[in-house]
Amino acid sequence: MGRIWHTAKGYVAGAVAFVACPCHLPLTLPLFLALTAGTAIGAWLSANTVLIYIIFTVLFLGGLLLSGKWLMGDKTISIPVSAGLADVVLVSSPTCSSCADAARLWEGVRIDYRFRFQKVDITSGKGRSLAAKHNILTTPTTLINGRVAFRGVPKQQKAIAAVKQS
Image 1: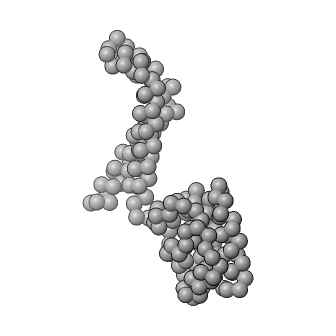
Image 2: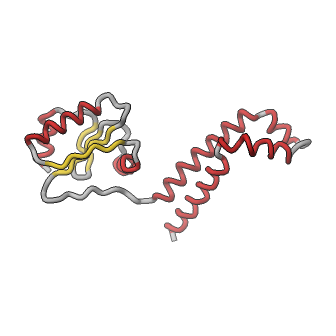
Image 3: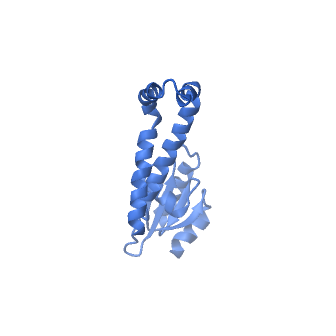
């Protein structure tokens, strides 16, 4: 029953986000103004159009976020560990200045130590799911075998020790 309730809430939040989308306001606001012409509500709407845009933007973003939260639920991405090799996932961002350093570090460590390495952009669907699951708020963040091992660029010795330990 709980899952059905979350799904229903997700669809309602998505519908609110769709209706409140600020890009629809140039079409819907004149319609609301025409329907409420001559009333106190109509006068208030015409006097506060900037506030209406702000309110609708907040409703849109809130509906979008809640819809994603309630419809995605507990769906997470799991990266399987295979053949005893460690799985190293670097969650990075295109605007992150340290992410290139972290990627070079892991590529260098990979030359001498065997493990699977994957770089995931935090703005991708997979990256957003990993960020939500592991509470990743900064990049670069390194996951080893599905657990946060490092936030930021690790020292080479610590990176090697973490790979050996896993």
